[in-house]
Amino acid sequence: MSKDKERLKLGPINYIILGVALLLLIIGYIIMAKNEIAISPVILVIAYAIIIPFGILYKGKPKE
Image (cartoon, rainbow, N blue to C red; front, side):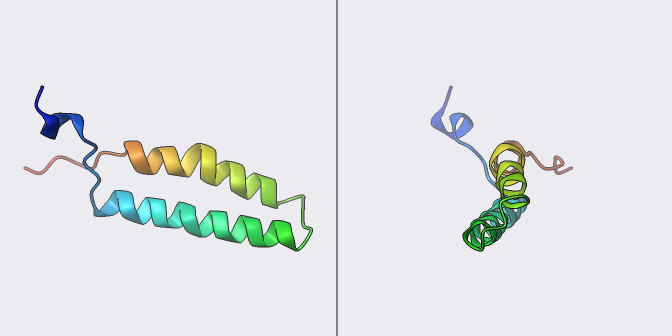
């Protein structure tokens, strides 16, 4: 296999999804700093366990 096929091919959509995850992480930690411990863990788990892996693994529609 060539190195080109082994690399992750992140497109602009992937970076947008990862940017949303980063924004949620920042919001989650800010909320946690304000002692709102009921909602902040939910936001952080969603960002870490769902959105970041989705942003890395998402492959857009193939170009025709």
